[in-house]
Length: 223
Image 1 (spheres, rainbow, N blue to C red):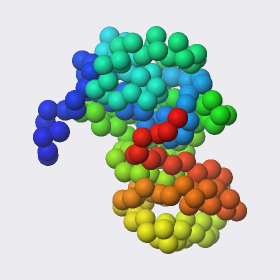
Image 2 (cartoon, rainbow, N blue to C red; image 1 turned 120 degrees about the vertical axis):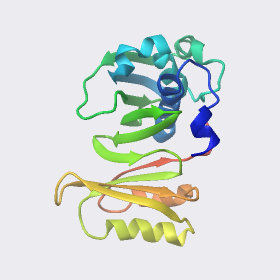
Image 3 (cartoon, helix red, strand yellow; image 1 turned 30 degrees about the vertical axis):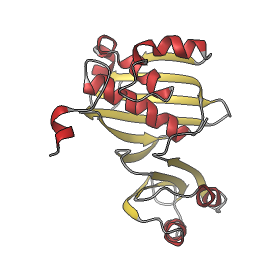
Image 4 (cartoon, rainbow, N blue to C red; image 1 turned 90 degrees about the vertical axis):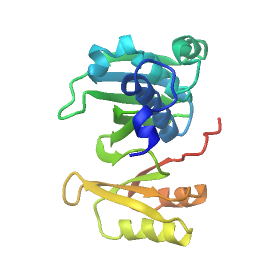
């Protein structure tokens, strides 16, 4: 346990779970989308729905989607800022099976046409877990540069991706593999020690059998 675990994150808002964690979920979702938000449909589960408004969870999520972090003093005004930018957003209740009480589903549409569906949970102390991306399991904490590869469940895809990372001097910290059934849809979740060069990600997207490549960079997103 370190000092951060004891005192929690530097933040604006009353709750590390409902506020700081929510901001981080929104911020990470924006990074994964890879472009500015045009429209966000937000579905709140459990205590995020029942008590979130009083804790500012709704404003925190929008703040994160705008690119703010947990210590940003503009968080209480995120609705106004989003409205001024012409961003459309909505909040609804959802019941998710076997989900953490502080869970949200985000359906995002970017200004450039990209789309992303993400399910994430706030675990306390500002920590989060990204549970699903586009309907497939993806269990990671967004603490490392993270590569999410959706592919057809066929031989060779895992070795192709890991070989490309090795040739680019990118070290794999953790790797998880999921699939919805043999020969169906599969996903790789790869946390790395270094940022992955854009050209490597671009090349991966061109590989046969690769359906979608999503990348979480921990560097500031450039508008």
